[in-house]
Image (tube, rainbow, N blue to C red):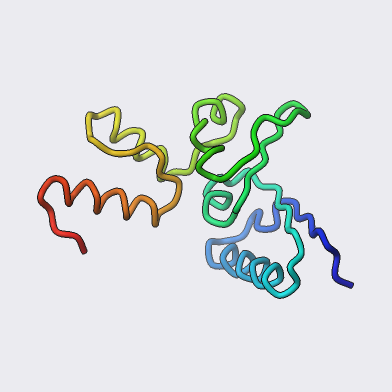
Length: 129
């Protein structure tokens, strides 16, 4: 049986980081192999930022936002107001910005953080690694 839509509710809850990545790897492989749509409910914004192509946020049974990770997470303050934590890396870049550093706060994954840090270091005369 291959459903056209696979709905998963917190499939990695309670797992350690290695277990989380294994599950997400299996989900991605399933999607790639079958072409099925995968809907994933999660409170982990880190997981959402790393693995989702599109994000749908529901608040009080109403659609709050739908779009790409960048589109939805650009509303971080509103998401936090609803009880959803921004990804940790986003919080770090927001804190850096508040301290006066010239960094983007539109950073949602470790890879995006790496690119942004290299950009900033390059502007400051640092070497790109």
